[in-house]
Each structure stands twice: as structure tokens, then as C-alpha cells.
Amino acid sequence: MVDGSETTERCVVHKRQGQDGGDAAWRGVQKKLRDFYGSAIYDSWLSALVYSGNENGRVVLLVPTRFIKEWILVHYLERILKYWQEESDAVYSVDICVSDGAGMQPQVAGHPDGAVDGSPVVVVGGTYDHLSSPLDPRFTFDNFVVGKPNELAFAAARRVAESSAPIPGSNPLFLYGGVGLGKTHLMHAIAWYILNSSVKRKIAYLSAEKFMYQYVTALRSKDIMLFKEQFRSVDILMVDDVQFISGKDSTQEEFFHTFNALIDQNKQLVISADRSPSDLDGVEDRIKSRLGWGLVADINETTFELRLGILQLKIEKMGVHVPNEVLEFLAKNIKSNIRELEGALNKVVAHSSLVGSSVTIESASGILSDLLRANHRLVTVGMIQKKVAEFFGIKLEDMYSARRLRALARPRQVAMYLAKRLTQKSLPDIGKSFGGRITQRSSMP
Ligand code: ADP
Ligand code: MG
Image (cartoon, rainbow, N blue to C red; front, side, top):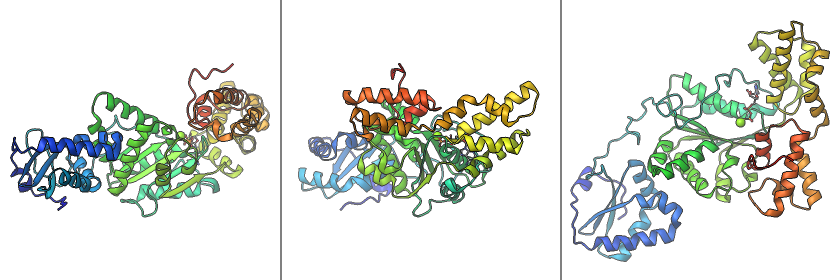
């Protein structure tokens, strides 16, 4: 019998019988499990199991937390029983019990972290601060201007924020689009909305980089169980810029487990990336396909109307006056991304307040001459990558793939250098377009 249900009695009754020969059998089972599942899964999940004893064919294994117990019941118990039966045909069941360190612990219904089901525990800004990244107070739904390029992403984000449970077909919500088009803004807006609403749900928002960093730190400090538990106890997990996870195998594995665990428990996930799930190079196929299971919403390049709308909202919030013709001039000429557009507006407004004169098209074009020139040239990182790839005779994907062949290093460096010179992108943004691997050592000649 493979039975996940466990009464307190089933766990408490058991007494360790020292000479039951079970230790050797358990070692045999462990070896088979490791061989079958591989060390990544084994170390993540199965290494947590401790053999307690075998009472007349009922084997009891202990785990440190309720969450791990549930995960093992769902995913691995059947095979654990099978392998036990191969070691000893007298075994008829395997029970998984949560250990309190000394013995057995009765199960209490509720959140794995001990909170009673449904109790308001907010991750962001609360006791889980270390998990989450800070939220920008400006990034709310109210401050987000909706237009054709982002209406799907906006509507989806809004629905996730408003509904108390994941919406079928929208989990995960995968937002993707180029740099500076509003992905982070929408994720923060979801978090703010929930934080300000009366229904408290636990939210964790963090960049994929932070997720990896936390994972590696947990590995080092041997706190991996705590790591898993924390992430898996949230109601909404939002991971920004997952293209950075590419290539880092064990982090991918962990991300995938966390991801699966949350979806299985009907928790909402929101993911962002600078490209669609299928274009995430260096990410395993099964992860890519799972990421694309829910709603994939892209944010397209901005239109003139959207850019103008954003500028109008911004000056309203700033409480300054900028003539409409100047706003139109900016919206027409700065097309690269919204971050740059905002930067341009700030610059113009700051300048005019310093010199004490109102903004005109002439003064704006003088102040922004570099930026305007770059926007007019209309050279994009994508165009540079394509040309450089052609010149060196390599595939375009190799510009941003996880492959690290020496032959690819030079073309990538050249393309990065040109991107820095010919576009207005910042180094980190350029890095993102190259699969996120730019470092201080990616020398700019
Ligand atoms: P991404 O995460 O896609 O790179 P961000 O969310 O950081 O981009 O957005 C860059 C800047 O542009 C932010 O200051 C953000 O507030 C602003 N922004 C992006 N889209 C919009 C929008 N639709 N309305 C208002 N501001 C926006
Ligand atoms: Mg972002």
C-alpha cells in the first residue's frame, strides 16, 4: 500500500527497532533512488529522508518539514516503496512522518511555515524581506499607461493582482518584452495592489539573479531546506528577468522544483524575461515548455501614442508644465524605450528649472542632442548582433546563447563594443541582450 494519509497514531506508535536489518536495506534503497533520479533531485529532496525503523513490514521514514513530506508523497513515494520491496518483500507500506528532531510530530493543518491557513502573512515588506527585492513606489497600476503594445500584459497583470486564486490558463503568467518596456513596473504593480488590498496574500518578488544568489548562499550555509520552504510557502512568486537563469544548471533545477511545487499547490507565478519562453537559450526544454504553459503576454515596442501618454502622465505627476509640442517632439524622436524617454523628460525639466526658462523644442533638442542622434541612427543591438554574426560567420543565436566557445568570444566582444558606442543602452542592458553575461572583464576597447 502506498498511503500518504497518516494519522498521528501511525507516526507515534512506531519505535525504532535497532536490529531490524533495515539500515542496510535503506542504504540499498538510497543508492537505487540516487541512481534513478540523479544527484540533483536526490540531494534536493530525498537526502532529507531519515530511516526510522521497520515495524512488521511498515517502514517509517522521517523528514524535517511538512512541505518536503508532501512533495515526497506526491513525487517519489511509489518508487521508494518499490525499492524497499526489492530489498525486503515483507515491506508492505512506507510512511513518511515529519520529525521534530527528537521523535514524531503530530500534523497540524495550516501553512508549512506554521501560519494558520489563510492568515495574512505578507512577504514583501514583512518578515520575509530578505527574500524579496524592494518595490519601487512609483511602479503602480495607476502610473502605468496602457496602449496597444502593452494592453494584454496589463490586463493579465491586473487580473492576477485582483483574483484571490490563480486563474486557470494564466499560471504562470509569463511577461516578456524588450528592455525598458514595463515588465518590472507591472510586477511591482501586482505586488503593490495586493499589499494595499484587504485580502492578504504572501508575495515574494525578486530578480532571477537574487533567486540564484539566495540559492547559492543557502547551499553554502547548508540551509537549503529553509530556502525551499520559504519560497514554497508564498502565494505569489514573481521572478524578474529569468533569462539570467540560463546555463546555471543547479539553479535551474531548483527554480524548476520551486516552480512546480507552487503550481501544484495552486499558487500563482509571475515570470518575466526579455524574450519568449521558447527563445530562452540555455534553459532546459522541459523548463521552457513548462514556462509557456500558462499565459504568455508580450509587451511590444512602444507606439507614438503610448510614448506621448506616458510623458503626459509623468509631467502631471511631477507637477510641471511642458508644452505639448515639446512632449510630441520627444515622443516622436525617442523611440528606443520608455526608460530613456523618461530620462530625456527628466533632463529637459531639470535643465529648464535650472536656467529658469520654459522648455521649447529648440532647447530640448539642444539638451538631448546625443540621445536624439543615437535614436535617429536607429541602430539597435539586434542589428549589430546580426551584422557582426554575419561578418564572423557565426550563428545569430551564438551572440546570446549559453555556449562559451572561444571562437564566439571575439565576435561577442566586438558586438558589445559596437552596441555601447552606437546605441544608448547601458552596459547592463547590453549584457542582457547578450544572454546576461557581460562582466567588467568584457573589455570595451
Ligand atoms: P523592463 O523591466 O521591461 O526593463 P521597467 O518596468 O523597468 O522595464 O520600465 C522602465 C521605465 O519605464 C520605468 O520607469 C517604468 O515606470 C516606465 N514604464 C514602462 N512602461 C510604462 C507604461 N506603460 N506607463 C508608464 N511608465 C512605464
Ligand atoms: Mg526589468
